[in-house]
Image 1 (cartoon, rainbow, N blue to C red):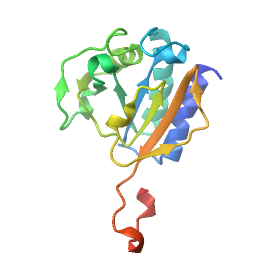
Image 2 (tube, one colour; image 1 turned 120 degrees about the horizontal axis):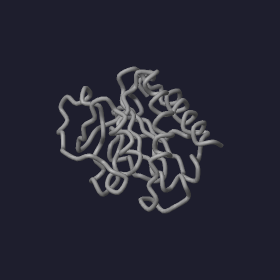
Image 3 (cartoon, rainbow, N blue to C red; image 1 turned 180 degrees about the horizontal axis):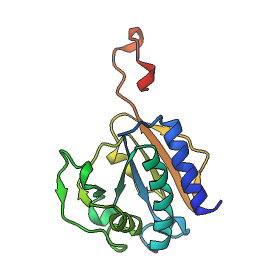
Image 4 (cartoon, rainbow, N blue to C red; image 1 turned 120 degrees about the vertical axis):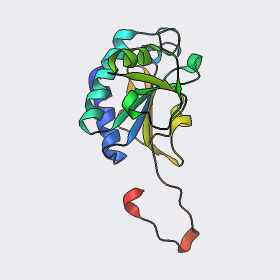
Length: 179
């Protein structure tokens, strides 16, 4: 499957299966190296990063979902977001590059209107393209979302959504609309 189509379909499927609502946040981790079948962090590719970004951003923005992007481990997995999104997050001073942050994060930084980096976030859902380990940036409790899109290029695609913790045991009742 073509990269554009796979990225778009993964985003559309996550919006649907995670029941994402306007104003919620999705965290994206993306290794362009893994997409090309190489070891993560070894072959950053800005063109592939731009292709994936364009498709994901289009889908999420049309649904009113905020997109946050995880940098690679060289930047301690900092998050790139739009300045307007920053409320109570600690801003850090870094500009991702293909060599430190990753090609995808570098593309996002160049593409957002007013990008800033923050140290952490608690996103409502996420897509991990190529084993970038987005779990640290998801709210508790993360639940796997099984997407039909299993690969983008050669990179494994994993997704998750979050839900509030269930408390009260077998006698409790739960609000299914927020599950």
